[in-house]
Length: 508
Image (cartoon, rainbow, N blue to C red):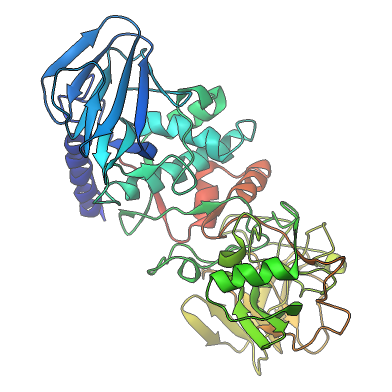
């Protein structure tokens, strides 16, 4: 594992030379951290950069200074002949320029925001791209307040800082044909520059300086989102590749971001046709299949030309993720299956979890309190983990009432346990199974052939989608991290809760 870390450190060192360069840096080396290139503007025809103090300008990748200024100065650029032209310069247009702060206290302004270190203006595909080149830690100071409210608990902010650092580290060089590593928006991570910084979020960055989430010694793809809606989503369901550390775990955030989205039948049809779905006049819509954890897996759309079965993912793409905010949704009037959530958390070694089965969660109940059952028929007790299902003769659980034996018709998932007696319905208590296996979701989807003739019809000329949660659902839930921190979880415990089997290591 250690040699993997050294391999990454070598990559980071190369990145430092590539991205910053001695000719661009205000110091030969700022600690041992990498530098990162952040796209502030792209596909623009002109750009104006205001230096608030001392600055100098170089042709891109040249050690020679074209001009330097001891006080505020404005640099103006446009595109000419496919290259960058500096206003007022006698030099021929170049592939790009670097504007460099004279000191750590100086700033460069672009599009109303302020930035440290370097701004590059680069020719790319016949337009200008404006890029801030800065150290990883200073970059994070402008990211964390853009991704999480600064008044949230410090341990949640620290978890956000580590996740954002890990994500950024994996992004170095991710766009090999572009002159930057990350966008400054939700396309990667929101970056607001120095004026967005807050004391609390900067402290979170400083207290986690250099800490990175790793799996088998390599930084993970640390995806995160606002609110999972109850359970996080397996990474492979949203992103390509195997992400063994992005396993589904419960998150107490399902009452957050409850939303509705109305849309007329004609607009819905137009948006579907734009995605090459062949639909006529739409008459009814409902969720046809819910996944085992209650997400909208398929929808049935009845229209004048027949019936369209469309996945929940494709509907979100057609209508926009900012409208259908998560895959936990249904249509107005359609009952959704009960879905999992928990009232208590504990580290993996914790074996006690007690909930009241009377307060089960549903789409209409904002009090998210109880795990859901695993709807799978078992002839004998079985333990389900990410490695498969193991049959056992007897199951012991540790409850507040002591050790209790169960030996018939129970399905189990370790960690935040969901359990159900399949003959009698909900059991009186929910417990965590003793052991060290990882949690898993194993259940049958719920198929709804027809929810009733009064469901799925337009209401006042509109279909109304209702749901909860916000984001793709993979990795760390930010509201879930807040909830964990409020129950006493540390930054590292939060990260290890949402990212399965990781370590938190110091890289610089």
